Image (cartoon, rainbow, N blue to C red; front, side, top):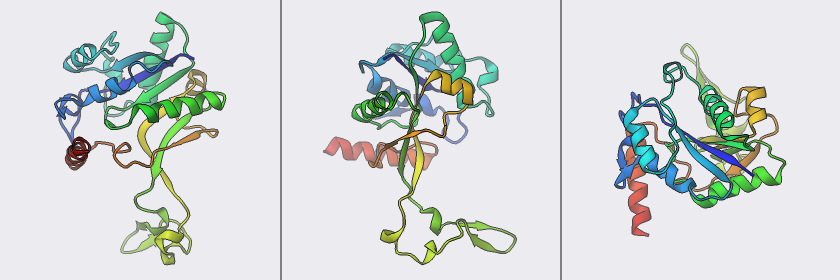
Length: 231
């Protein structure tokens, strides 16, 4: 099985400037995702899609394939992961041959483990290459959430969940952004990483499911790293 690992790393970040190349534990954030996926047998290449020359140089030095800088139309705030993924996938298959899967790894999830990635690949292989999506237990249960109107608030989910104890609520999961694996045909046909026949890769460890999107998240990441180093 040949799987192309794709790491998307746009240069612009408004909430955390320079996020993808900012040092975490002494190495650029993007390097965490490059290092963890290298040498996994099913991964044929680790391709980094970026519009930033500095990010490209760091990724190449870390051992990733960076054949070009991302076109300007794919480096805007409105460009989607699907469009970026298809651009990389089309180039790779035209130049290096077809692959059996595209693995999207966002650099904002630095603590996903090699074992977790391998588990996701195994699920993909064992279930006839159905899309695999990384999910984690929801921190805030939807039955305890509210939507706001003009001077009113209503339960987000119309149910009796707000009267239930937390241990009695049905399990709820959220997409954590750490793992997306899909067949090229499914991505091209559906133009989405989300399909009806998706398989879950459940990541219970809150450190592995951390998605760095704000300065607060960055502080959490540094705390997690210190905890891991102490262990």
